[in-house]
Image 1 (cartoon, rainbow, N blue to C red):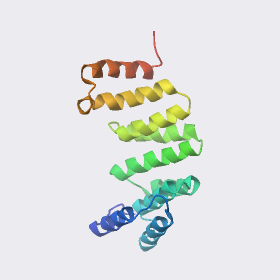
Image 2: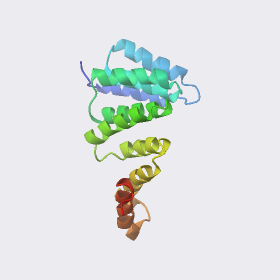
Image 3: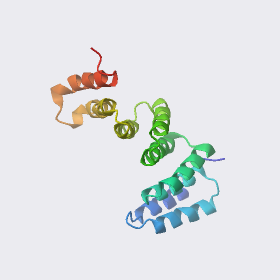
Length: 170
């Protein structure tokens, strides 16, 4: 099974995104389904079909595509994106523990990923684990303090993130 995306296939995928109308995802779903029919079981296209259903608010359908894409084998950035989207879908379906399992896998495979941390924070928040959620978000923000006006507070806020992540130790 190849996960390679040829330049032609990458261009076709981009065309699907360029034409996407988030208010009417049916044409985008049909477009990605037709690409998948041309390249059966291509894990990246399976993932893209799942993403189109996800954007349409059809989380249960998206879930099946994400699971299939993961089983077919993804790697690199598309694996990171799929794990984030799959975990988000599980969160929307109310499967918070399962979402965290997926995000913990993503964190192990992509330890420096801000997107993994943000999606994890959303799930933690929904699970009423607000300290951990804030810790995740503070970690993202303080890691990029140069892009904000946090300045001299970044180190202290990063320490606060760790303190919250550790469960407010005495």
